Length: 110
Image 1: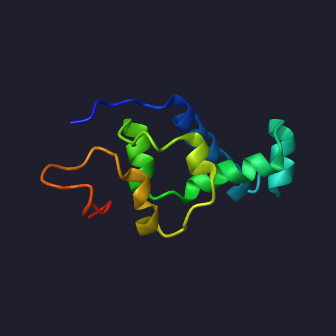
Image 2 (image 1 turned 135 degrees about the horizontal axis):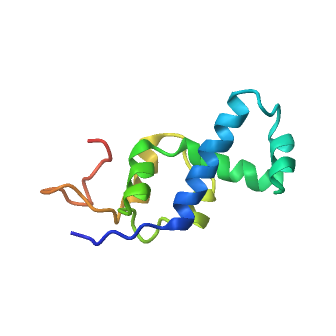
């Protein structure tokens, strides 16, 4: 069993992403540019962080539980990723796996 190591940078980025998504969906801000200006950050950075809301629930849960693999870094998850959750599963390659599962055949949510 791997030791848990919560990455506070990743957790904060997830929290910001979902907060910003709620603010946009609620109509509080009409555009990413408007919200980015209010938050004092570049719209391009906000767009990259907002992509975290498209991560599979399994990856989000692993990050929040500190079970993500060492290759799951903020820089890595801010890169363009597949929108298909099954394809994102490679991010969990080194994550803590359920008993009797091997990384070679583990499919998140399986």
